[in-house]
Length: 69
Image 1 (tube, rainbow, N blue to C red):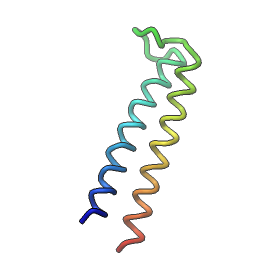
Image 2: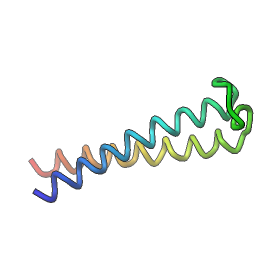
Image 3: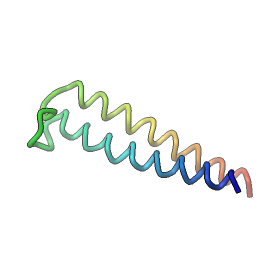
Image 4: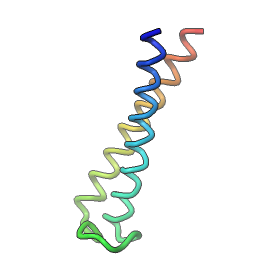
């Protein structure tokens, strides 16, 4: 069952990337305060990139699951 383990790893990493990326994006645009990252555009860009790659992993994992049935 290495296939299932690989899909689970993709899903876990994808979810973590989306959540962390959303927080970093929120801090970068100033919506979430209380950090040195607040209001820094660089963190908004890094967050958006993390969200993009996280979603790509999730979509890829979903397509892999559907394709294997």
